[in-house]
Amino acid sequence: MKNSPRKTFGTVEAISKIKISPERLRYWETRGVVKPKYKKCGTRKFRRYSEDDIYRAILVKMLVDDEKYSLAGAKRKLMEDVH
Image 1 (cartoon, rainbow, N blue to C red):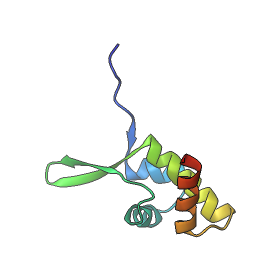
Image 2: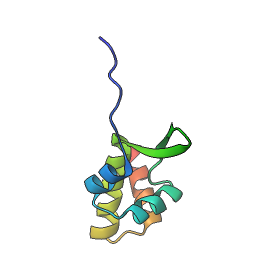
Image 3: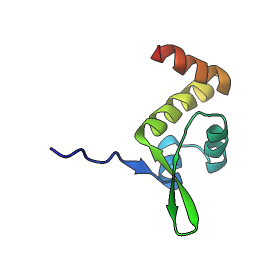
């Protein structure tokens, strides 16, 4: 059986699934919440978000927006839950 490639999403799809603004998603990228891969197409590069990126961002959004965690606190909470 062949391994099927994992689904990735462009920025528009990602913000639609996470329900945040593109600016917020880019900010979270600078803070390490999501770590998109970049796909080169000609001279341009496009962000591609994994299913894990989307899931993690949704969890962070819930912690920040609903439970009033800081962004750093939300990242720490996710790391605690993983270990």
